[in-house]
Length: 83
Image 1 (spheres, rainbow, N blue to C red):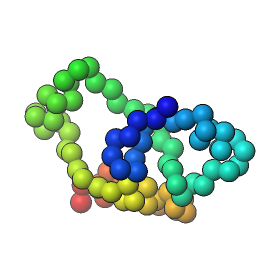
Image 2: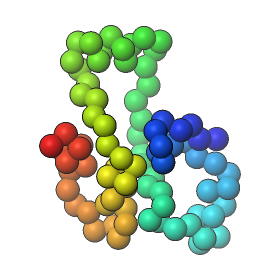
Image 3: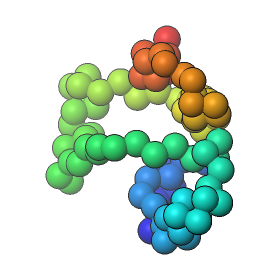
């Protein structure tokens, strides 16, 4: 299953989405697949945020996924978010 992390942004996946991709019913403007992840032990992320290891930013789901619209985005997503 997937987990909602903010409005319109989910981590994980679902059998339904996987089946849509397999049957060519998937609309690539509605989701973005990325590889890789980060994981933390309990309270590790909180400690790292306090130390300035990470830079939280507020962005919309549309901003995060804007380069998925036509596949032509070749910028640096994280740089654009922090700008």
